[in-house]
Image 1: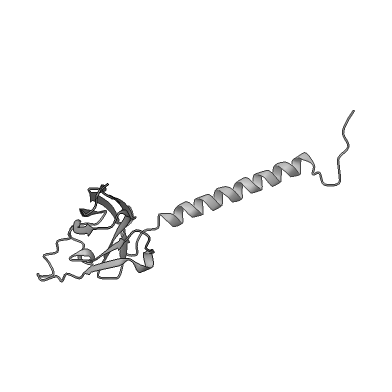
Image 2: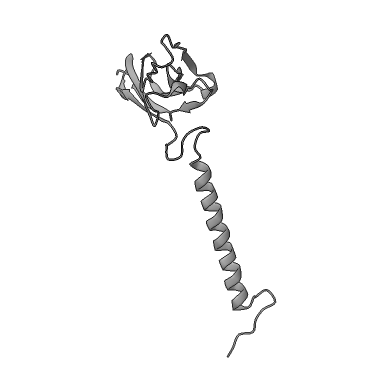
Length: 164
């Protein structure tokens, strides 16, 4: 016995067209999202990646009081890029229980003291922190070029344990 279509059903051809349309919309949306996440910086040649910072702490876990050395490694920046020659550096330290907005900031604004044709970009940045309270600390590094372009690392976590 054949089933009778209800008032809300569509013929098979229309279901197929509707499904194909939804798949097409999803594909176009995913393609646009992927392209927007990989946009190049202004004035950056095609094929060059957006600059990134990899942040590491040594040690990442220890007992209070703990002195850690945090190192940021800058990648995808040419050593002869005048925009990042002696760039401004800001270290952000979030103490346990503190909000990011209230974090301790240490800014370093070095100046280029050499001829314009002697550009040399630092690709590694290091900072020591003395952590005296137990808990989880977060550290982030921001490097700012002369044109205002900012490169931010993700936060690295440092766990300070209480001595029993």
